[in-house]
Structure formats: structure tokens, C-alpha cells
Length: 268
Ligand SMILES: CCCCCCc1ccc(S(N)(=O)=O)cc1
Ligand SMILES: [Zn+2]
Image 1 (tube, rainbow, N blue to C red):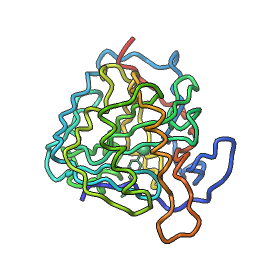
Image 2: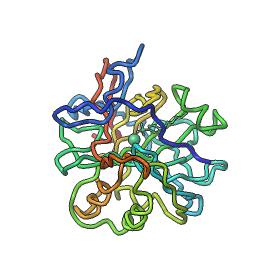
Image 3: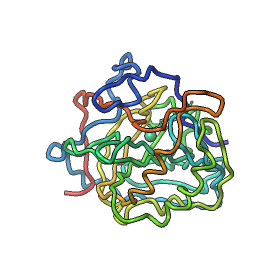
Image 4: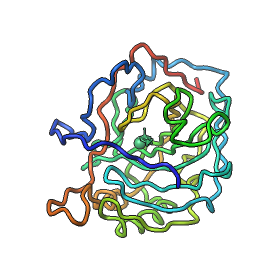
């Protein structure tokens, strides 16, 4: 159980950054698509934005698997054991999974950008509104259904907490491979400062691209080593049966129009 990152296969279109998600450039009626560029000087400080409160129970960690688009760590979301509240949200949200997006080089890979600055990778911690809905699959269709924390990764010192994850990746090299994974605290992947963030109303960045996400983009990044990122790139988009092995890189979507949306900041 737990939710997963599914998506219809989309043509792999080469472009200057080979982003994975060409997909429909504009979703019919889509005026709150993600990701976006965060223009810092246009973001609006909102003093009513509260600090984020995350309570993650490492024992609710279930499995890590390669779904052919990213690798994701899934959590048991049948109870309110690992939750997110505070921030702009009125309700309590349950963690169901986290995953990453990254590039083939350290020059790009993130989905969101800050004043057009690209990061080599971006972590997404996916939560759904358990006060209002009873299943992730239900919440994913509602405009206040999901809350995703985005954390930028920069290349620098090795991230000790991430290493347990990195060590499990060779076992899930191919699409649809799964390995049991327990006792992982996703809190160790958050930056030390989670009080400073930008927030806006957006969408999933992979199909079904539903406009159900309150995005919470951390201002502070985390550091991982070049070697740790290289292991991400050793994953494959393809399953063991396929003869053409394609390395899992550039699994990010192109940036989407802001369409007049406000991006608020919790800090001035
Ligand atoms: C009913 C099945 C829907 C599965 C959609 C799973 C999904 C979760 C998070 C993200 S992301 N990259 O916006 O965090 C994309 C897709
Ligand atoms: Zn994502």
C-alpha cells in the first residue's frame, strides 16, 4: 500500500536539457501547473504562514522501488503515524512516499528553480489530506488534496542519512523492482531550517498532472556527494527484460506558466 508515482509513458523528446516530461504542454484548463520558476523578488511575505510541523515515524517505512520514472520510498499511510501540518494548511496531511528528480549532470535536474537557478536534484515528500479524504487516490483528485515538500539538493559533502537509501539502489536498478526497506526517517533529509519556505498552489509534475498540490519549497537546500548522485544515475528507466537499457536521468518536467498565481514566502 501507499501511493506511487505512476505515469503514462511519454515520448522521449530530446531538447537542450532532455527533460523527461514532454507530455501535454498545457493540461486542458490547466492554470495551476507545476513546476515553476520562483521569482524571489515577486514572492509575497505572508506573516500568517506558520512553521511546518512534521512528525515522521521511521517504522512506517515499507519499501523502496523503481517505478520506471524515479525511485520511491513508500510509507504505511493507513494511520496518522507520519504527518505534516502547519504551514499554510488547515488540515493534517499523511506522508505516503518520497522520491527525487535529477539530471544527467550536476548542471541541472531540479523541477523548480529559484530566480532561474537550477539544482542538480530535488526531493519531493508527498502527503495527502487525511482530515478530508480517506485514500491518497481520492485526495489526488481534489484541489486541497496534497501537500508536497520540495527540497533542493546541492553537490557537496556526503549526506550520511541518504547513504542508507543509496546502498539500497543497486537492488532496484530495473523498472518494477522492489526491495523491502524499513526504519528510514525521512526527517533526516529535511534541511535544518524548515521555517523558511515558498508556497503556491500547483499540480503533480507527472501524469495525471492533477491540480491538487499545495507546494512547500524549502529555501535551504541539503548537500549530497557527487558519488551519491552518481548512484541515482545508475538506475534504469527500463525493466530487466528490455534489451535497450536507458539510464534513469533527466526525470524532471519542463517549467510551467505561472498564470498569475501568487508565490508566498514564510520569511521576509
Ligand atoms: C492515482 C495515482 C496518481 C499517482 C500520482 C503520484 C505522484 C505523486 C507525486 C508527484 S510530484 N512529482 O508532483 O511530487 C507526481 C505523481
Ligand atoms: Zn516529484
